[in-house]
Length: 173
Length: 177
Image 1 (cartoon, helix red, strand yellow):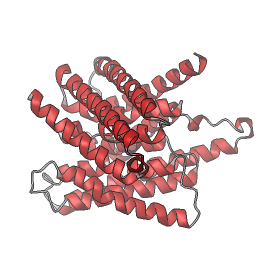
Image 2: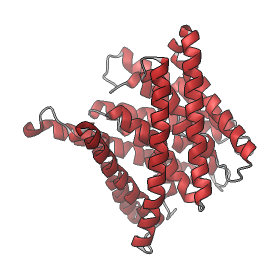
Image 3: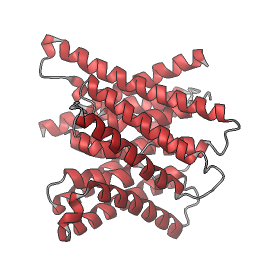
C-alpha cells in the first residue's frame, strides 16, 4: 500500500510546483505525459538491461546515475522534438521521471514486474495529475482572492485525503 | 517573498521522504540528509550561476550523492537506525528540489546574503517539518490505545499533516519576516 502511494505521489510533488507556472492545460498535460512516458521508457530500458546484465543491476550507484541521466536526456530530447517552449528545469528533472525508475527497479523482484509497476505508476500519475488540474481550478474559484500558497496547502491536504481514500479502497478491494 | 515559493518548494521536496520516516531517529537522519543535499547542491550551483547550461542541475545531483552516501555509511557504522528502506531512500535524498531551486534563484539573487536567507528558510522549514512528523509518530506510539497501529505510518495522514504544517509555517513566517 505504501509502495503504491509513494509511486503515485513521488512524481506528483513536482507537478504541484510546476502547475503554478503553467497557465494552459496543454502545457500541464504535455509535461505530465512526457514525464510519464520517460519514466516508462527508462524503467523498461533498465529492466531489459538488468535481465541481460545482472551484475549491472546489483550496483545501486550505476542505476541511480544512469537513470537520472537517461531521464534528463529523454525529457530534453522529447521537448526539443515537440517544440515545447515552456520547459523549466523541473519539467526535465523531477521525481517522477528521474527517481521513480530507480525506486521501482529496486523494489521490483523481476524485470517484468518492474515494467508492470511502471505502467501502473504512469497511469496513476496521469490520473492524479488530471484530477488535480480540475481540483486546483475549483479551489481557486471557490477561494476567491486567497493567496497562491494557501491554494497549495489546500491542494496538499486534498492530496492527503485522496491518498487515505485510495488506501482504504485498495485495502477493501 | 510573500508568495512563499521557497517554502512551497521545500515542502514539496521533502514530501516523499516524510513517507519513509517511522520514528524520531529516522526523522533526524532524513533531515540531516535533506539539508546536506540542499547545501551541497546549492553550493555547487552558486559559482555556476552565470553559465546557462541545464546540465549543471543533474551534475549537482551527482555531486551531492557521495556526500549523502558518506553520511549514510558513517551513521550505519555507528549502528544507528536510519529508517524504513533507507538503502533506497539515501539515493533519493541526493536529489534536492530545494537545492536545485536555489541554484536557479542564484541567477536573480542580488546579494549573497539574500541567497543565504532563502537557504536558511528552506533548511529550517524542512528540518522543523521532519521533526514535528517524527515527534508526532513517537507521541502516537506512546498512546496505549494505538499500540501497533500508528496513523502516521500511512502516507495519507502524513501528507495532511505536511499541508497543515505548511499553513502554520506561512503564518509564522508572515509575522517573523
